[in-house]
Image (tube, rainbow, N blue to C red; front, side, top):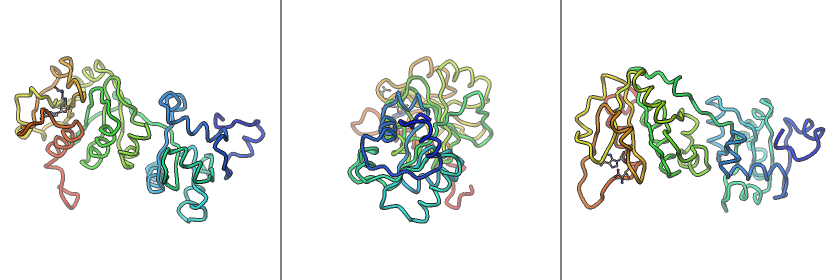
Length: 288
Ligand code: SAM
């Protein structure tokens, strides 16, 4: 048990029990704080999510909670107790901590009362078999955590089926990205792939890849988004799409602009595309 700084015996006794922690230098707390670094997240394949509602939603969606941390003030709240019970029954650890400790974990002055540490999940591209009416978003080297989080949230809201991360990207499981997803990180499958894998998959999966490009010749509102599942391919914030990916596209779409701005923010452009691609599938009562 890597969370355990003490002897083995203490570790086995602790499993499934609530442990009180007030010291900032407690080794378990140190391990949790280390999740702020990507290296630690990669090594432990875990991440942190804040907020009681988020944690409840995650458990309902079948995610595994490794450690539940809650503030003393949240003790006794029925929902917190329920989540704690669930955590324990799945072999997880429950920590009751001081607000000072919670602040240090989330690096916030007014932290949420509840924080969960979850196992990361990635879906394999080869397991992605798009069906009619499905939409995916593929992001080329997305850099900004806020953009990625916003896109995951927006993809979820538009009813997309997954977000594909191409090349070196910002970590979808960083605290900043997870915050920006507002819980959608638990609902939206995230897939990692190289450009080569993506190109190969494109040829075999039957999807229409619609790339957005500032040099795109086609108005994004004139494209057929109905006859095949669609992958919206978006370029890097600074560089835009590399030729290698742009030439893969079945269509190069552009969102017409006026005014002084050279381009739209990546998250905004993705949102506009998502709701256009899925326009015929979205309705206020949930049925189109
Ligand atoms: N300097 C970059 C370039 O020249 O491509 C700008 C990149 S823009 C901030 C990030 C991505 O958003 C672009 O690669 C493209 O995918 C999308 N995008 C932004 N504005 C767009 C528009 N008006 N039409 C189509 N795509 C757009």
